Image 1 (tube, rainbow, N blue to C red):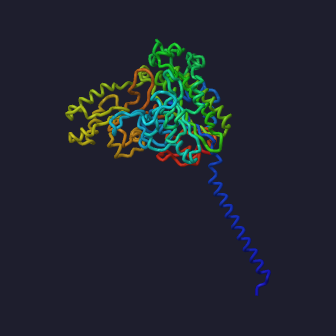
Image 2: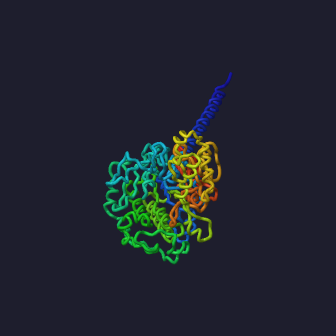
Image 3: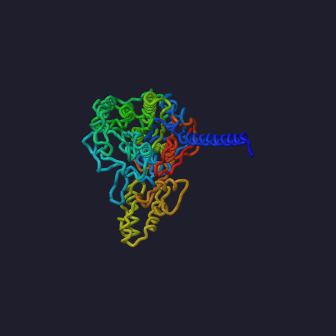
Length: 560
């Protein structure tokens, strides 16, 4: 027989193991809860995405000594700087650039293959953001007939909206409509862009709203933009601008009414003959106007003021306008970036006050780079030049007529692509692959082209490096052309003044990428990063789903 003390001992031991098991299970659950909740500890109140249109990476280093401590230097010194960041597709232009930053993928997937392109289905050119299904809000004009309907996948801003049950706000702002529409994605609360001409105000589309909010109406009626109708002189002593070429040179464009492209630019005197408020876009004042409106949006929309993450997408467009007009090496571009640095400081200081220092996250990048003016490069004995498109079309037309008996095989030539008429090819009983190869071979014999690829090559090969990899990432089976021409380095299809972009060459692909703020580990890397990496990195920071077409990868070394 067992004693009472024995049974008591057994019960005590059983209770001990039972209690230990409960404690262990509780600890496991608490650990799991901690792991699930971990992303929330680093979730910022606001994400601010900044795209600087046409910003080459070397603008950061070239103008560094002219920057203050609160703009670019603050982002670089306190954030994470990706020094070897590249676009991994072409064409490198504004529409595809903004789409790729926010979708985490390339034109091959998101469908924005240019600012404009030839639509094979409707047999006419289209604009990346145009949509006649919607009307302008805020003006009597068709400038607001826009939507993101040509974007075929979701954006990081869409994913934030979906994740928060549409409670997280998304507002997108740019002088250019496409610089606001595409970053805002399909579900943005609002996208605003600037209407120039005689208007000088911010507008939107009925895709987003039926009427402008009161804060926008008040801002437009205040006519605050008129303060920028003033002479444009350098913000610092022009003799200190050692990092750019002579002020008076042959490589810069002229405003109508100017005889030389030099400071000061008399904007009031040039006003009427240069589209009035549109003139401000081609000055650093366009960026200041954008900054003013951004700060008003932060106030008016109360962005970043609660526990649900909001997203503010900003694009500074004037850097592109000034680059196109005056070129990479101009005093004007230097002054524009020095002034942009001060505008960035204004935004960061306001965020510190409004959202709270350490409570928001910023990324800054570009939508493409730019080439130095080829006429300037030639004068420095560097190989460079220009494409004569009329001459190429004429010569190619003669070749086609001689070889096939018809000069109508080409339907469109744009974005360094040829679109062929497949009905005529079929009627002539020709093999499309052989036609592509014959025309590619002919084009390759022209001095201005370094490489030529066919759609057949893009569809039947998988490239992983170099120029063909970049071309393939820009190739969309449903929307792209039949033949892809790659100009030699330094060769462009543009005017003899000002800079441009669009190629697969490194001066168009190398752009800045800086992350700053909550959840970001300070540092830098010279390892290659690519534009589609931005969206999944932000998604990882927020603990939300990646955009549904994502091909990029999170940059893990930046995350705390």
